[in-house]
Image (cartoon, helix red, strand yellow):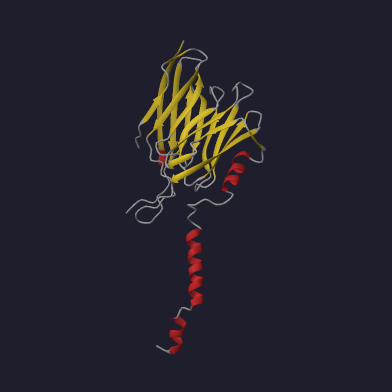
Length: 160
Length: 107
């Protein structure tokens, strides 16, 4: 093998850095298993459009400190008479730091007795949760709670 | 795919009462964000929608996302106005579909 050929095969430090950069970019792009800053705001806009969101009417009930993020009891209550005209059409819940910002979307029919829903959710990190209620007249109301999570959900991989 | 669903609807109610309905269904709700032992991403397998109908009319429906805990549990309310049947439908990834019914007598 000639000397020039060997030179061609040698990977310089600059090449190595470049390759590493490409590999890192490639690994990051198809695996969005982490939160992106601003994803909550983007998800909210996608669901409710550019409606103005006001604070109040909604009560988001979550424990302030959670030991296990895999199952966190959550209750959303909206102050509304639920009459034919003045009622809650939908409740949407969003999170800040899970891989996906949506948590749940609920729609109430005309015979839903109370604008209240309870379920159990997963939280991947200590974060803010926002609940937004869309009323029949189109106004949006919200409540936000901070939750401290000590053991995160979603992101743990299976043990070999 | 079979799944066990538990439904709690009062058997009787007075006309106009607001009744509480609780539902629970067994499902692992795989998020699609976890890696398996081979390092590959485990594909998402969740229930995506839950609907409750009262005598055929939709009274409550939800869209679930991966942030819902395994074995989705939902509590909601309805106005008992006629003797009839509640129909509960869960649908999800990989053709998951479960339909359950519960009857109520309204006096």
